[in-house]
Length: 165
Length: 369
Image 1 (tube, rainbow over the protein chains, first blue to last red):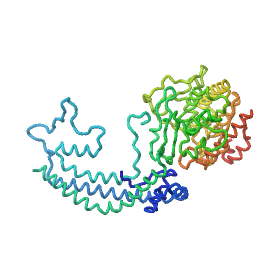
Image 2: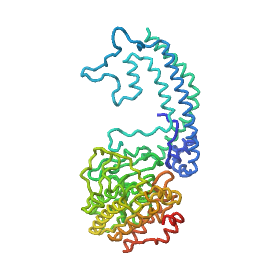
Image 3: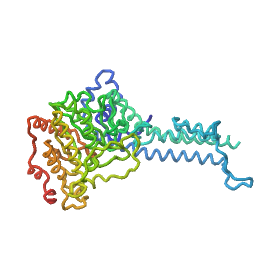
Image 4: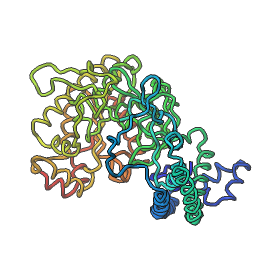
């Protein structure tokens, strides 16, 4: 998955890898020559901490601006789609209430898409297809871009583990 | 018709929007590229241990003691506020898989300090080269009751060894009295401060979350423990009971017991020490070195040694934004533990004079007296 920033608190390996990666593409020859450990040992992690922080600060700043731009454009899609009118009844209908029954499957369970385990993108696409909201599928590229522009993506803990809390 | 027009309009708008965002994507490319290259290079450097685990995935439920580290780990631990650190555990979940209890001359029990939170395998005090070898038995969040339970389980393997019990004043002493740490059930001492018997309680231990959780103001509690009063008396009564149990066990199996008191880093510098004292219900009688004095006296009563690590450590021996030891701190601790184990084996318990401690603390301590 694309990530904009580096780890907030790097370990020694992270700093050495940063120093090597920043010298790319030359650094990528080192593993082939078997020189990677020696090259890593030659770098001083303490000297790389400041460049690391500066790079992360620039990435976070850029990410804030970029996410705002993507959100603005994505809301523009909503605005344009709204020109085709809305199905939502803004005024009460003389024929009765505006509630519609929830879809149920054969066993009586909620049939709305959203099975656990499916990714959010798959659930959104499933909803847009099944709920006759095909236009919403065009939001997925913007949402993916927003995800890729997030700063400091934290590791997600597995479910059903003792120390989740 | 309306549905079709919405889809068409959305498609056209999305295409136009994505075209507008091309410069955004172009500017993001260097950041994505370096991030990806760095992670790839790290994977090549670190090999198997490139997997990053949040700390919650490194612990598992353990009957009677509540929790323990997972066995067979070789991963980079990710904990908020702490630099990522490389952790390897043996089959039982204890750090330093290259050393067993049988190999070691020193077995160190404790909490996250004994686990080596925040330090890589190469800088962890128990893994540093030297004699005698050290095996650390610790997990984040452990109180002294949990340490005692593990000593009992390992009793048959401790003969001839020095048992070093690392006790962090920041929370261990208080949590000896608590049945829980947040949502986790924890063994505790019942009866402390009362006329009745004291005992370690484990009947409530299960994987079920503890139902009643309240905020624990650790620094306020530490300040109160450093101030003579009811809480301080209960805390040291519980600690005294646990030390007595451990000393009895060690004497029975032919091991030597040494307690090592770990100060909170705030107690090591005048400015932060003054802030700690100010949190006390009675700052005029608060003494951050009270735990050292009380535990030294308790150890003396039960024939155990005492090592005041506050007399060996400075603020720079702790991580910058974390209460745990830095690489330098780990080196000092390893040296101190080996020194005191050597003295214990020779039948003496080295103790630095009070005059040295007073000189190290300077004006603030003089004011608190």
